[in-house]
Amino acid sequence: MLDFAIAGLGIWGRTLVEALQGKSDKARFKLAVVRNPEARAEFARQHGLKLVASLEEALVDHDIAGVVLATPHSLHVPQALAVARGHKAVFVDKPFALDRAGALSVVHACQAADVPLAVGFNRRLLPSYRELHKQVTGGALGRVLHVDGNFSAPAGLRYDPTMWRASSEESPVGGLAGLAIHQIDMLIDLFGEVEAVAVRSERRHLSVDIDDTTTMQITMRNGVSATLTTLTATAYRWRFCIMGSTGWSEMLGESRLMSSAIGAEPQEKRFETFSTERAELEAFAAQIAKGAAPIVPHEQAIHGAAVFEAIVRAAKSRREQRVSG
Image 1: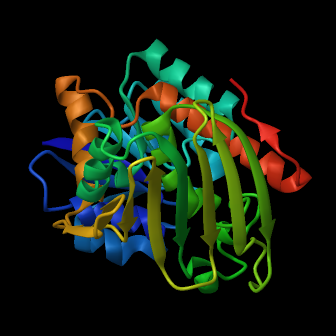
Image 2: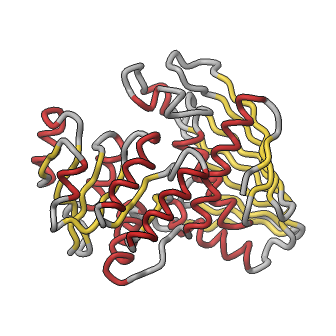
């Protein structure tokens, strides 16, 4: 049983704690780093967490094997560097970094300190996605031509101006950092590197300072094209459809996969759901204890940050941007 620290007990930090605590024989959270310990005292009591006010206090605790970062996006790189220098394993929730340079610095720091590094893209572990991945890589869809995705949610409707997620500095391009980034990660996992991006992103409804309606045109280096949409002011929607020369296959939500070959009736598969949050944290524990490979290869994590950076540039300029590296 490994002891983890978590930095940040906001919405997602609490989700990660609730997914792991008392439900795993691989790892548990021992302490949490929070800015306002009094505000999280009851949650900490319920989950057996010690609260500390600084990351440094977690890094000097010899029992802590790894630190999970669920903090504002702009803090991920400096905090990950501090954890690596403290010779603790590093888990960074998405987005890994806001640009390629930041991502590279974290990977290099972890390599220099010889500590494991994991990036939190839990939806790679969905059984429906694993089946879709098998169909694509096994050639069941023929030559892949285009991908059409939509990950939307009413998250922005729940934000108020005091929340860090309600800032365009922390949440550029609307639902990019919290939602669409998962489908961008899947594109990279399935098809390799992104060549160029074009973006239109607007705030049409929300009162807080983030966009609510975003569309992205993406060109992969291997020629596959993709259209991704993300809205932060509508009902929950997940669809991820891959269209090939012999048929298509589409994730609808997290547990359904619809597929159709040319000339055939669509077929539906349903999958059991489980906690992908707990699974990714247990995979992090396996990196530490057994030297297991990370769920997201580091070169893909770095490229994902480069894509994120290019999307932000494209949204600001309203011109297509090539992805660096």
